[in-house]
Length: 491
Image (cartoon, rainbow, N blue to C red; front, side):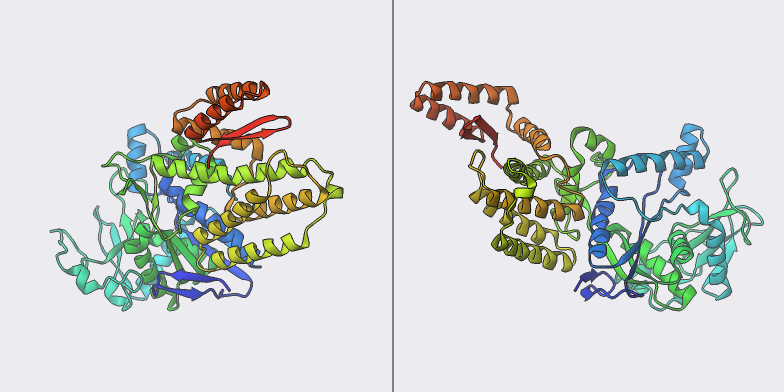
């Protein structure tokens, strides 16, 4: 039984879809005016797991992530680059897709763009005006009108964020030319200023406000109600609060049954921001680190916890991945010594794997509890590593057991889009990153291991022990095999 923490109500709730066997998910996507930063991809990484897991539970998932391609920032970028706003947004939509593809995530079922839904947005606003939930005021230019939503016409305003209108009104400044009935009323349609991109409407040329865009696209794609609406915690107010108000005022019914919000990324305890100069684009991060490092960093903590982005947490992610890849590389080295047709599967070990899988299922069904799921995986890895070592004599029984373990980790990783790289090759890449952090070079370690092998061959075991001690101090493990010495960084 899947349980989800619903921000609307602030509690864990059993998931019950609107239509049996089907799930609709809408995620607020990026505003496309530049390369996207590492924070923009936490949601897509996490909801890649959500969709995969829900499909595992038997649901058909229809999942949309939108592109906001109408915005002041886009128009500003267009002026700076002497381009049309549409050209700017298309360029950065494609750049987003490149970064998304680099992360090895499944494509979304839908990627709606605001500019493709202008008739539906205008129709949505017209319905709100007809129902007296919104009103027109004099616009920026003569003969044009703005349209605002009237929050006094929606009695439940604030039910998502817990912020009450009367509390929000305290201290709100009203501009001299402000024509709103209530200072908290928000824009549904903005009349065009001279030279701005615009679309036709009953109120004259203009463009939609930010909040109405998502509501109109959701209605056009899914109808009046969806199962899950997702976004970053920073969108809960006012964006999602306003979405609820305008959507439920229009339909008269519930807008989204579940609201899921992931927490922010922090850099050394500080929120990522331009003013602090700590914004890192995904493009730049992936130049220095493999995509699995980023995905690990986003999935190891619970999605409702902050994700720290520091040199230490990057190292921890590399180290964690190396522990997993070390074990599956070991498993592969074992079962590849025996023909697959000769594997003898261990029924007792199969039962042990089932216990571990039940622990993972329990964790993920409890609001996608990845920390507990990872803990169950590492418990299994510890047990496997205690029973297997490189160079051991391989029997069909051991090969079967190693294969079962290998397939288990790969299966778990498939939900996370992790652990799908070629184990031995990728482990070398991870170890090189760990060596760099430790201040060592692979060539230096290789030389020490070779020198140790020479003194061992000469039966100078005291000297060999000195080399082992030095390597241990460097956090290098050495295993002596019939084919030679094997080393890897301690995890």
